[in-house]
Length: 192
Image 1 (cartoon, one colour):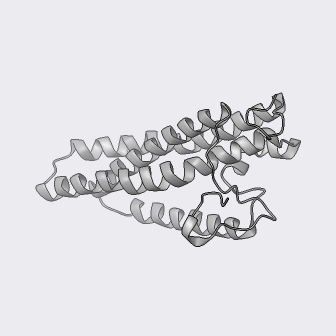
Image 2 (tube, rainbow, N blue to C red):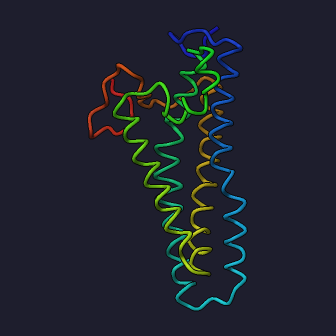
């Protein structure tokens, strides 16, 4: 029986694909948290000036809002969960094997979305390299905000993923090949 009216029936293979996709994305987000948290803790243990504390007091809320809430909770996580729900209803052997990449919108995606993802990933790699060049304690202070954002992102993917697996996926543009992109004013959300 389908979870939503009009939705294709979900198979065991589809459920495995969706679970693998969500788990793979969450693992990708959690993986850097441990080393970054260690660097952040070392920086917080070092003697900090009022400038460091001021930076930290502004940086952490900024990262929680911009990366955690705006980036992950309102955009990345709903799209990931919506694609996982679609994958659960449309599994193939290749999609199951590549489920995390399907959920990340890196496989089986519109060309424009793939180009945007490649640009975003390249920018993130560039920022990571630049942050690694920062002296102590600045690198660790930056890492505190990144840990907050990534942690929020992992929790958001879990939240939306569980909702999607229970039959209530977010109404989000799946960026599937052959489908039109939504109008600019409706970033991400499905068009009616």
